[in-house]
Image (cartoon, rainbow, N blue to C red; front, side, top):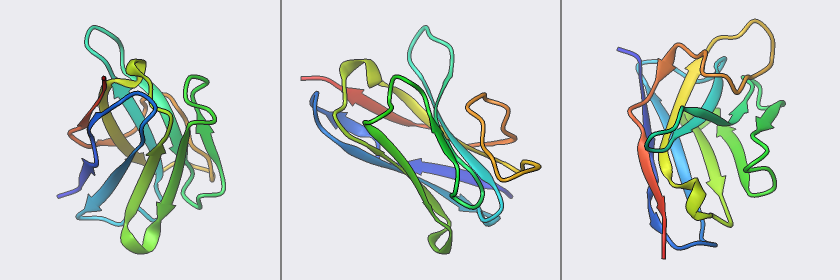
Length: 125
């Protein structure tokens, strides 16, 4: 059974940092593009960041550029999202997603085949 599991969410004060992890079970992430998405209450799911299968390409939503960094460690079968300078508007459930794409690329649209259950991130004082 192919599963993605997110971890690392929690409550943090504005300006703080969190590192989210996305770990696969039942398959290896090597070869998959990975995306991080988030969904706040009453809002649509939005792409936050993504990384290509090689790790050589990545993309970020404008709202997180310069604050979030995506990386992958295929040996650990894990993709990370380092989130710094967090703001209250970053509060959401964060999901990771995986898919096989034709080229070494990634996309911020939610057109991924495999999804995790999400981890809550709350930024509040």
